[in-house]
Length: 144
Image (tube, rainbow, N blue to C red):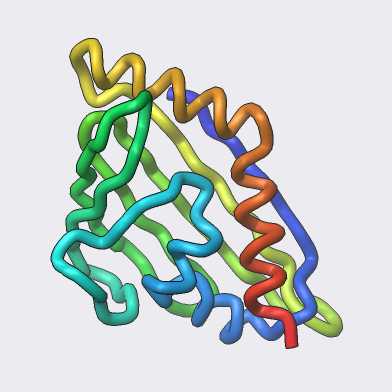
């Protein structure tokens, strides 16, 4: 399993950043991996929530089972499984004039050929800076 991290100062209160992190429509705009929420629009992400999302990866439409572990106090933590597994954490800590946002994504194969290919493709995106771009988008979405 490999982990990528990114950090950025944001000119917004941690509560505003958390709103951006937990709004499914906003998530689609900043996520490093494009996705759609299966079954239509969803409510704000909350601890214990489970959902199914899908998107394009390695030239195929793939689905992921997502579980939100934490969504509050400036922190969002979730996992997504199949065909590749993600453990994701975002945290917004208060600093003078805004927040320090940190993000981490750990990726590992969900098994099988598709899982290995999906892991490699995701790793390539993250290695190329996709997580940093996501944090930049979060900052832009949260800015006044």
